[in-house]
Image (cartoon, rainbow, N blue to C red; front, side, top):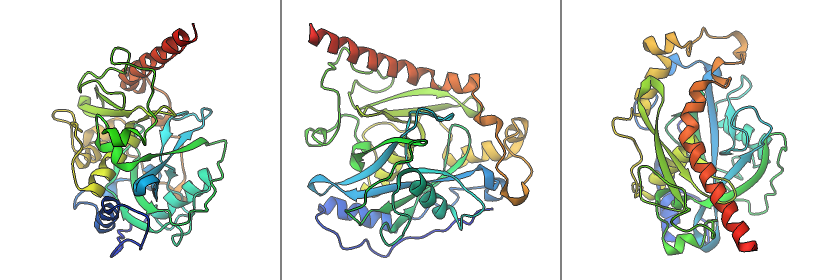
Length: 327
């Protein structure tokens, strides 16, 4: 079982130039510890079902905090082409889950593995991925402005960054819009539609049925370089809420949606876990077997159907308007 550490700094490093809001956000993150009971059944989660991601912050324009995101290579079998936070599965050689996140980030993007160049601010509560891994995010602050990423083309096609505070806004403020990559071609009629929230060219969401036939809410942020959605958007919404000590201006959860601790119990303990073979005997030597969950299934397709339809509509509208502009 991988070691899970709970580390926070007494105060963030002396930095500049950062706004007071950004400095307060770093202080909030450095004081954060996962809520008690956020991982209710650690003994039931085998090592090969654990993963970690690195949420890398850095001071951006106007002193705001930006987060580094990657676009996964389109050749990858799982979630190819999607936006992600650098990270991956725990391996037997990793000292703990923080080491997993740092190693994977370095292998994928060349981001620093050295804690002196990217000190840890906090560990966040774990999340469940679509293929039912328990994913623990670690938030770090990039201190070295001279870092040059070295992308592994087999895993990552590009890096980009977004202001962390943007993941709390449904309709970005005029000031925030200046820092976002939003499509200038789409009007209200052609903008991506959301069945839940008012029209927005930045944030939409849909509800779908998932584990236990419960309703879950999936959020999508429409950056023109690549949409941010699914697990990545969930982690960023939560991280921004912790950092800025406020809730998003949109509804995060579907009615009666299970909490993450409840979902962890559903996935890794009880009749549902046994029936779907989510829990297996512990492997000697931390072997990494191919999970049935990783194979494409009809269930996966149905979960993504609403999201895929919205994306097709968005891209189609962009193409149509650009063609009209050429005439």
